[in-house]
Image 1: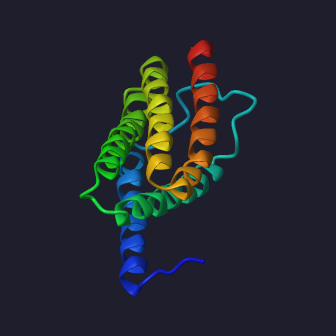
Image 2: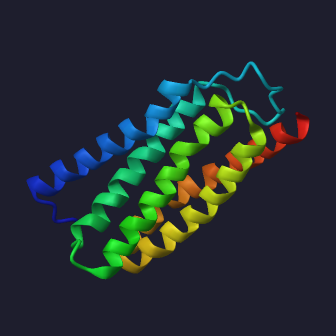
Length: 157
């Protein structure tokens, strides 16, 4: 059973809002126009992307809050937060690389590094709290799918 104080709930909500706001920023700045590449057959409907990313950023915010609440005075927590920051920066870099520069090759390089960073984040979060790690698994699965899409687009270009 979860024993969350009002402060914990507010903190979790703040993490969710922050991760969603920062996560959406690259799409707002660089857009997500798909007209410049041929869509692969497995390309999902456009409406699915903001829905999935909002859900994933929300899960990331909850996971981040769980880890943060374990105490930033702990070295395993600080390491997990640092690795999360690296993977999130890579996540934010993908949109400008792929859509901003319209460069599927660079996008593929970023998404490959992102995939590795997500795995590292899951491992680091697992050392702090298994629930936080589990919340990132859908993110890894989606980025794996996005990597396949990115690779398919790269090959067709």
